[in-house]
Image (cartoon, rainbow, N blue to C red; front, side, top):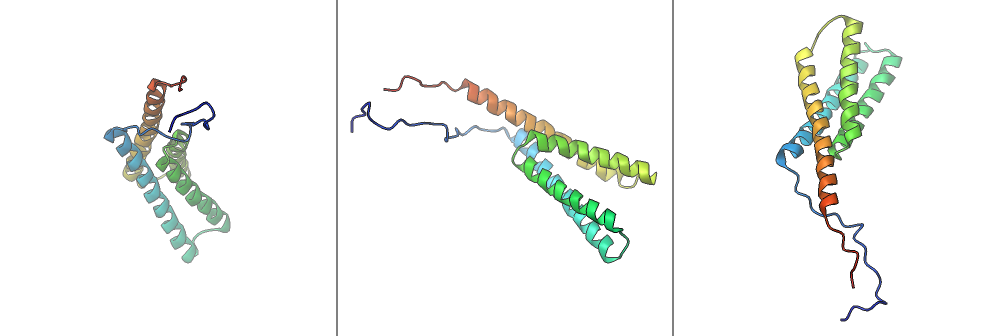
Length: 148
C-alpha cells in the first residue's frame, strides 16, 4: 500500500529502544534492591518480635512501621533504577545507624551495617551510571524528521 500524505502520522515516543546495560551496572542495582529488601525484612521481623514480647512502646511501634514501609518503598525505587531512591536509601541507612550508635553508645552490628552501606552506595553509583548511559544512548540516536 502506498503511503500518502493523508495517512495517520506515527510517533515513536511510546517505543523504547533496547539499550544494552552492562552487567556491572545491572549487578550494582540488583544487589542494592536485594539488600534493601533484606533490610526491610530484618526490620519487619524485629518489629514483630518486639511487639509480641511487649518490649516496644506504641510510639516506637509506629516509627518502626513507618521505617519498614519506607525501606520497602526505597527498595522498589532502586529496583526501578531511581537515583533518588538509591541516594535516599544510602543516606537514610547511614543516618539511622549514626543515630542508633549515638542513642545506645554501642557499635552492635557494625560489620553488617558496613556491608549494607556498601551495597547501598554501589546501588547509588549504579543508578547514576545507568541514567548516564541511557541519556548518552538516547542523545546519540538520530532523529528522522523528513519521513515521506
